[in-house]
Image (cartoon, rainbow, N blue to C red; front, side, top):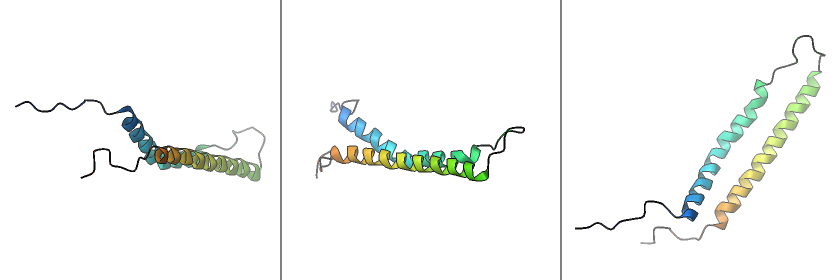
Length: 95
């Protein structure tokens, strides 16, 4: 009674696809953290020139737009990578 031995490691293609899928799942968490970073920015230290609130708001809005654009591009790249490797069939076999 010998059991059929299965390989210990998964195929490289399957492993990479799973890691990309994991990255796609973590992308909203990463984006949320990046969107919260401006809340940690402090105002000017005491004794420095006063910066108008409008200038700070402009920097924050520019940062948020760049982060938003970067997340959109990154999610598009991940989606294209996942769809490109989709062979349409089940990896373990259709029953």
